Length: 155
Image 1 (cartoon, rainbow, N blue to C red):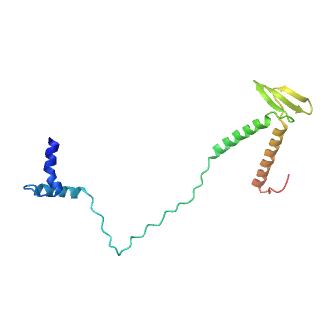
Image 2 (image 1 turned 90 degrees about the vertical axis):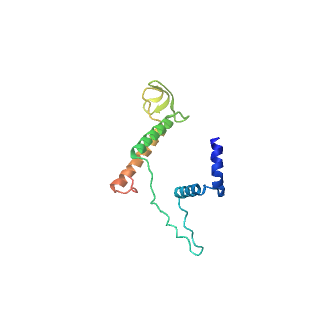
Image 3 (image 1 turned 120 degrees about the vertical axis):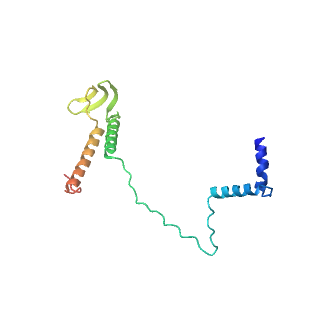
């Protein structure tokens, strides 16, 4: 009932029809609507061009890198994984087949003692020895570069 009576009271105001005594209500309602609404944007004359757009913002390039600690930890993990892969069994080179507690089951060749098939401390395989020698050569090259003796000379 209230909604219907409010509708009947405001319908002539919304339609713009004149009714007796409603002129003051319409004026106050329009004044409140104008006060609540934001002001209209100024009209641009057709002859004037739009103001120039501000220049684009150009940022300096940013280099993103991991911290030295993360790089060092990643290098240690990668080296341990490579050692594990180099120590695996291969037909002609030997290597570890399985690890049973502290014992290593596999085949290792040593010039002094010959072939070993079960060991507590197995000798490094040929691949592990070559990888260690390669790492040592790389480190020596870095040392020569760091001390300024030149990387092109061989020790």
